[in-house]
Image (cartoon, rainbow, N blue to C red):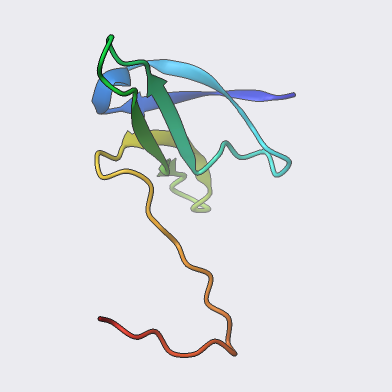
Length: 91
């Protein structure tokens, strides 16, 4: 499999460049999770990074690469909405 050296910003991996495996499309995953084992009585923690474009070229506006940014709030919950679904009700 192919990997891409991707820089990390913020969190415990700030400033590091790690090889991240790419998927079928050639892009790294949208979310990168780093599990950290806990001490004797504490549960393990998971640090989450979100993929963002690192920049664009001046002339054509093409993406230059990817960078992972620390997301302290965790992974966003996405709900699949189909056109035939009922409208969402808020409690």
